[in-house]
Image (cartoon, rainbow, N blue to C red; front, top):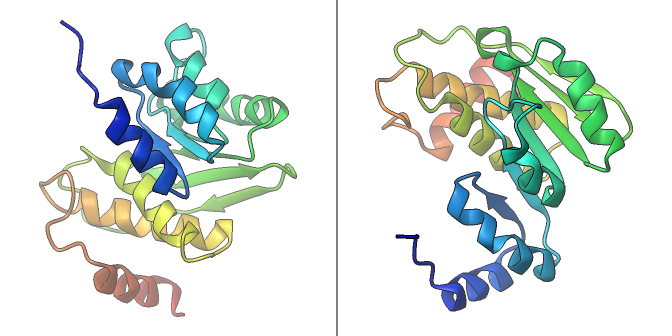
Length: 183
């Protein structure tokens, strides 16, 4: 049995949205034509992307911005460049405790070091990184500052035993930003 989606409710939500974060769960593929019709920016986190796996292709094709992990990419920079050449506006690659790298459509590289949060559990760190980046993005910050916020939210995640740090609030994120970046 397939997953039932209330297309009417989803269509209304899409129309109200400024932007779409599309999950790569298989049943969301049926939403891609609807999303394309809406002409909204679509961001996709490919997680542990494997270039040889065609499963990702539909998600890549529709995305304006992509997030990936370097875990399975020995040459992540080449993959990022290829995505930009294919018309993506932004590609962000996380490297776990080695930080993250972004590449914009002008082929400018942006690096951000991981922060010294105590490691308890890494489950959910990538999703938290994505969320932290969006937090900064919707505040109108540049890529470097968005990466810093993303790193903070991911760091807060790994320092708890939960998928999202139970103490996560915008106030905590701003406090951590001042602590690490002094601004």
